[in-house]
Image 1: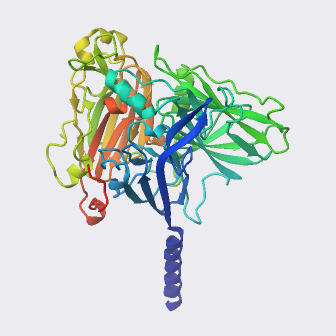
Image 2 (image 1 turned 135 degrees about the vertical axis):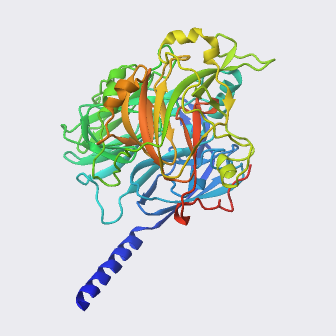
Image 3 (image 1 turned 45 degrees about the vertical axis):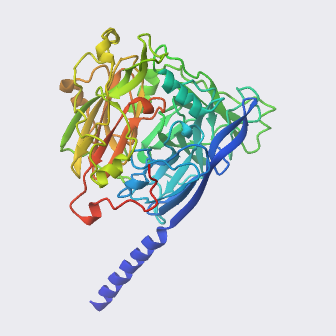
Length: 570
C-alpha cells in the first residue's frame, strides 16, 4: 500500500512539474512609431511596430502568460487588440478603444498582461483605434502545451501568411475625411501577402513574398485576413489545401482548392509540396458581395518555389484561376462545409439550453447630415451609417465601458439593446430603400447585460438597407458555435430544423451571408464587457456594433479583478 501511495504521489509531482515547465512567461516590447517604406513607386510614412510590416510575431504555448509592453511613439492615440484570445478574467487587456480601455496617448506606454487559457492555434494582434491596423498588425502563434500534439501529422514547417491591404496615403486622414463627409472609405490601392504586394502592381517586381519548399514535405500555413475592408479569396496554383482549423479551432479535415477568408478570420491549412519541381503562385483578391459598390479589384500574389527549381524570374510560375469577385456560391459552399473536430483539443459541445435569444439585424443605415455641413453620402443629403437592430453604436468618450461596469458608473451606457428589431420588415428586399424613415438609425450606447454562465443564441439577419453585403461579425471574449447559415429572411419555422447541434464549426468571426442570415450560440462564462462588431473598419466608427456586459460569477475565481495600475486614462 505504501508503495502505491508513493507511486501516486510521484506521478502527481511529475504532472505538476510538467505543467509548471510548460507554462512560461513570454515577454515582448512593441515600439510603435512612424516608418518610411517604399511601395507602389512611392515612399510612404506608416505606423508600424518595431520597424516592421507586418509587425513582430508572438509565439507561445497554451498555458503561457504573455506580457507585451507597448510604447506609443506615434502621433496617434492607439490600443492593441489580441484578436481571438478570450482574455479569461483579463478583460482589461482585450484592447478595443473605449470598450475595455482608454487609448494610449502619444508618448505614453501600457503593458498588456494575460494568460492563454485552453486555447491554441492561429491568432493575430492589431491596432483597435481608427484604421491604424492597416499597417499595425502581426501574427500570434499558440502551440499546444509541451508534450501535447496536433490532431494531425506534424508538419515539416509552420508558416504565417498574413493577407493585408495597402493605401497610397495616410489611412487615418482618409478615414477622418470619409467620416466628415459621410461617405464610404477610399478603396485600397493594393493587397499584400506578408507585407508585400506582389509583381502585378507598379514598381513591385521585387516586392513579392516567396516561400521555399521541399518536394514531398507538408507545411502548415497559418493564414490570416488582416485586410481592413475586404473579404478575400485565396488559392495556390495546382495545389490542394486541407483545412484543419478555423479561428484557432480544429476542424474535420476539409480538402479544397480555394479559401474564402473573411476580414478578421484565420484558417490553418496543410499544404503538401506534391507537384513537379517548379514555381507556383499563391494569389488573393476580393470577395466583393455588395452589388454596385466600388472595391479594390486588384490581385496580390506571392510565389512558392520548390527546392531545385530554376529561378522563378526566368520561368513564369503557374497562376491559379481565382473565383469571380462576386462568386457567392463558392464562398458559401466553403463557409458551410466546415465542421468541428468532435473530441479534439479544446472542443466544446453545443449548449442545448438557451437562456437569452436575440434576433439582430446587421447592415448599413443613414444618419442626418448636421446643419451647415455638406454631406456627400447617399443621394438624400445624409451621412452613411450602420446599425444593429436599428441602433447605431456610439462608444463613450470619457470612460471605457469596462471601467463604467467595474466601478458602477452611471450615464455611460444603457442595458436596453433590443432583442429584436423595433420594426419587422422584408429585410432582404431592396425595395425597402424607398421607405426613408426605415433607413435612419438613431445613435446610442445601448448594450446587453448577461448573467454569468448564461447561454446566448443570436440570429444575425443581413438587410438590404443601402445595399446587402457579407458582413464579417467578430465577437470579443468568446468563441461561438455556428449553428446554421442561409439566404433570404430567417424563418424560425423551417430554418431551426437546419441547426447542426453535433459538430458545428466554432469561430469568433463569422461572415453573415450577403442577403442572408447566420445563427450563433455561446456561453457567457467570462466576466467583463465584450465588443461585437463588423470587422470592416470603415463600418466600425459608424455604428455596426454592440457590446455585452457579463456579470461576475459566484466565486472569486469567476470575478473580474481590478484594473492594472497603469491602465490608460481618458
